Image (cartoon, rainbow, N blue to C red; front, side, top):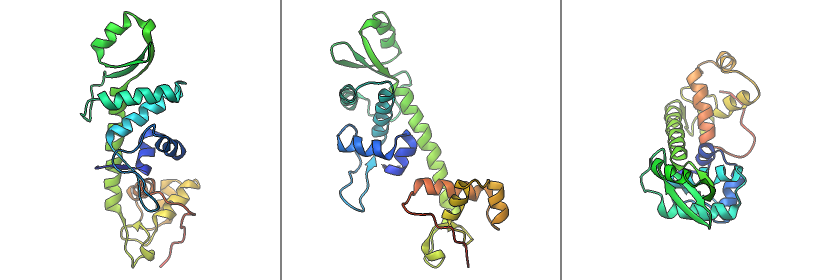
Amino acid sequence: MDGYPTAVVLRLTGLTRRQLDYWDRTGLVRPSGASAKGPGSRRLYVFRDLVRLRTAALLRREGISLQAIRKGLEYLRRHMPEAGDPLASLRLVALRGGRFALIDHKGWTDLAKNPGQLVFMAPIGELAQEVRQRAQALEREEGVAAKRIERNPRIMGGAPVIRGTRIPVDTIVYYTRHGWSSARIIREFRGVTGLDVKAALAYADLHPKRGRPRVAVGG
């Protein structure tokens, strides 16, 4: 994936849209791929951005101030290896006196000898691996959705539907969110399989839209 749009970033990081918008607007973490430049444009984040977002979210939950997080992320931006998969043992640590460091297991051993200098620590390597695994799982979901969902201007006005049917993705999502199980959906809608239900839900997550879901099913 060349870049991660907002909807995907929200799934991969667990952030809310409000947080993502605020952090972009204030410069805490801005998308490196592409910035939104008006209606119809979209932000694109790169992998390193996702790691910074997950790091910021973790530190915020630990009660670290945004000012301290901003300094830590700036250090991370300048010093994190370009490799997409840093060592699992890599840590970002803040030390007394406003200093930062990236350390591996050897550096952690040295730091443990003088723990009083440690202010906070973020497991950058673990966060990067977690984001990578989530992204890979999402790409698999997207692959399934691409095979099972189609858009044709001659079918349901071009709305995304289950391939080979006239059943809109919105319909599957609507009934799922209203408590229907996959088994009931399969039973009620002829031609829909369990894989189709998963594909519809994945498609809806990857392509969110505003407004009420379309529930009409017809010929």
